[in-house]
Length: 349
Image 1: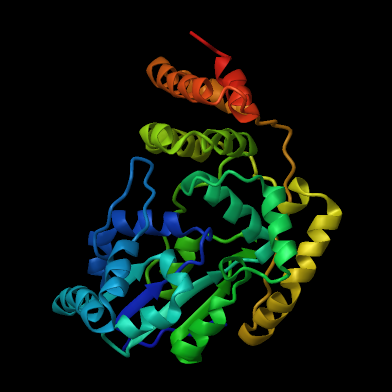
Image 2 (image 1 turned 90 degrees about the horizontal axis):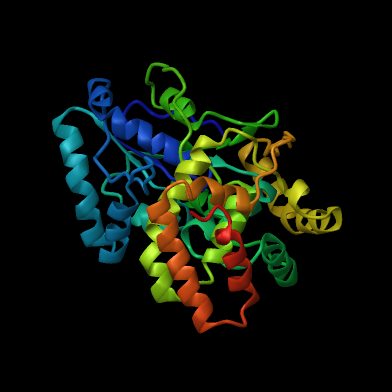
């Protein structure tokens, strides 16, 4: 569904969906805030980490949701007032809003808003969801176990299926909602360029990628690290993630698709689970949810290869080895810590 944004729109809300180039959008708009203002767009400041990754305006909207519709509306209204004083439209970006359409719309202090969302095929989203869970949320299960859980439930999770888009439509109406596919002709779109065009900004040269998915080797290494006892993991998780993300953003090789990571029968079974929702999304929004086409690479990225790159920093490597040694001493029978110890024993010194 491509809906032109009305000229009298004063609040534009970009809600993702997750893993559709949102981090690149937020880093770009954050860096271009002064330029955007000259083009009539007010983009409030938000935090960026050392790799340029952020939650965008997720904190602002989370505070608004926690405060309830009335108080929450005031928090957003302050930013809208700043935009009005500058004779600008307010632009907010937060993929964390994707799962909460009713609550978010209830907090918006104006009826002159427009919501933009890029939709991703659920079978591609499964891989990204698992990757993000391992990266940021300390998930320990392998991808095949996540697939088994989805199949056992026989019901597509809202966070993967695209189901919230129907709720956004019910809350916004067609005239205040734009839904576009993230993958076209087998290739992910440039989300930043797409949003610039939608809100009427001039085209710019493509920006570099940010917050790329981990390579398979990095996913496996972080999944093993996630088994550390909470206290030990707390001590290293933030820095470990920053280093893994920097490594991921520097790796240009394609990431494997679901069909490369799971067997054909499991992929077919997952497709049957998600197919009714996909068909409904395509019919109701008039879009085609393309799949990310596999682009095979000869590069074999293992957990050992990733660790060899991280271990180039001897101080960091020594800190990780000390934590893993302490964990293995406490749980000497754990095959996970034996495997992790084997990996980090490489490139010692």
